[in-house]
Length: 237
Image 1 (cartoon, rainbow, N blue to C red):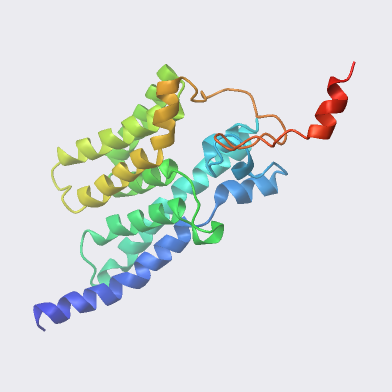
Image 2 (tube, rainbow, N blue to C red):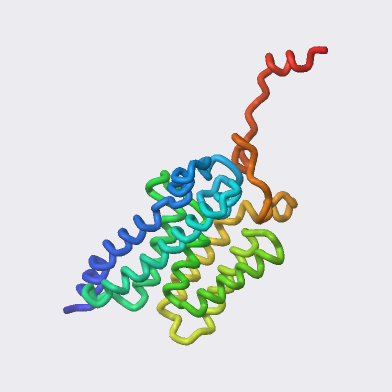
């Protein structure tokens, strides 16, 4: 078989795996869990992000924990599924990492939510735990430490993502994993660009702040204009 034919055959084998991983990543656990618990849609308040941190703002730790587990499991399942199919399909060693990246992309741009998803931190960590368990555990612990010290989920996410990529660059045997993890780490930081602006302005929400008022718009959403008639009545002596 020629090199060109081999590459084409590999692409044909890998494409359905990546598509399946993307669809797994597209499952919006934040929305599904919130509905199951009778909570408000996480896209309607706080950061507007369908992720565990925003679900926590409802005050339900159980719902937030289930969302976190589900989002992390998406990345891990994609990696493990690809590894199980690697030998029968003749996939390259790097295929599992790119399957995890496909699940990560599904979380960021889910087909089920019109491609408007979360920031991918939990899915990134789940993928990392499946690809490189020691680095994954260290990254999770780093997230917890930074979050505890700063009280900012965004800072913890960006620092841990960058540190994971750096750590893998120092670990032997990581070439098959490093490119995909680096792409995901860059996207984690990119998805937090609005949070970076809020950090500089001092308006970034901290972990542990109370749940948002009922009907409060997502951060950055324009407030509803005042009803001039109602306002005039209220201002009458």
